Length: 149
Image (cartoon, rainbow, N blue to C red; front, side, top):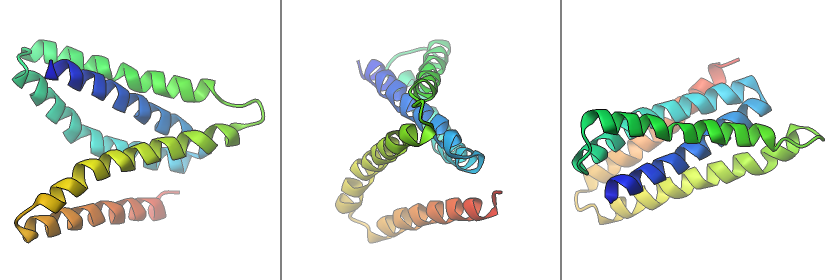
């Protein structure tokens, strides 16, 4: 059951990624590229972890790979949804709700997963490392933002 729940959650996650990527490209090419880069950096380890969850849930490698790949359709559907919801008045109304919705969702998920772990951590060094790498990620995105045309 955990494998199927993971697939559902991954499909929904990919749907929001598709929304974010499409809406960010509607803003500008720079915002689109930065959003795509951020999501790719997040997705690569995330997909590997989901693959392992499916293996531990009893799926064989081939089935787990096919099912993981099928969840990517959620991203395509999300991108299509973002593009189809464009207002005749322009992209401003579309991105006015899509980007805050997806950003808020990503922040919520990150904080729900990270903050409780940090609060329960017994070793303060591990918490310092987590905060350091979080800040490093922010700095990397700021640098990419400054260097991308």
